Image (cartoon, rainbow, N blue to C red; front, side, top):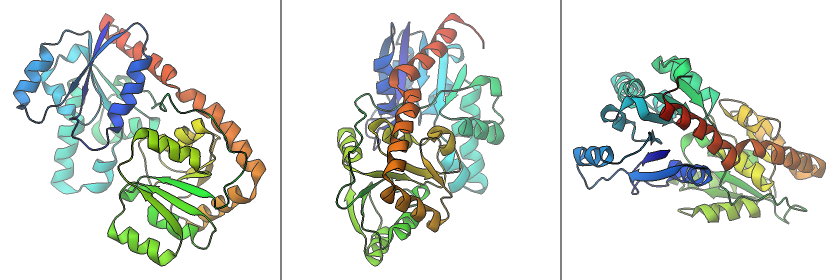
Length: 328
């Protein structure tokens, strides 16, 4: 069985979807795979013709280029949606309607199967775009295969709080406010705006900002940190939760959206709009070694649900059904 993966252009910023499916692809057993990257220097027609020349049993559009679904064989094409965040929170009026129609609804009608990464996102796809429940398969994300469980023996002299992401949903202003006055160092992964820089300056907290770092460098930051704080306002999945679990770092995350289910019982849950709740959770982890160790062990067990091999096996089942013409 041969699977063709269609990815976004290599020029597209941080290749998060592509890195995810690289881990999955390498863990597939008894499958041949090929990758086609959207080529911005070619015409769209040239890209379509190039794809249609590739012999394969399954075509998997992995995210961000769903418009290819209009021009590919429905019977053997899968489309993955990672979230509905931009549609749900950033757009209004006719722009929102058109975006939903072109990016979600119409492509979903032209594929055999839709996969998504959480029950939360599945419910949104049904609610917003009327997708059929039976057409959507929920297959969660996996953590990278090089993430190893290595819990820290004790806190750093100045504990490091790791924060992944700087988009508005990542809730960074409230995190900064929650950490004011604490003897910690906040490590922020992602480019920060002038507004955030101003908030950081006013807060007088110690911080480091890491931009454009490699996946291996991100892994190093997990190893160096003492606590992972991921209190987003909304997420399609919440990969940093399971990455922290896999490395053996206690996690604070939000009690909304997809995050509680992803975390299971392996994180402290807080209301992301309540600054005091975030602060109390951080202080608890700083002061209670037993709680940290408890969450580390719970995290180890939780991460077992998201290994690359387990997630790859779930995708392989879908691929086999499609290649053999089975409807489920």
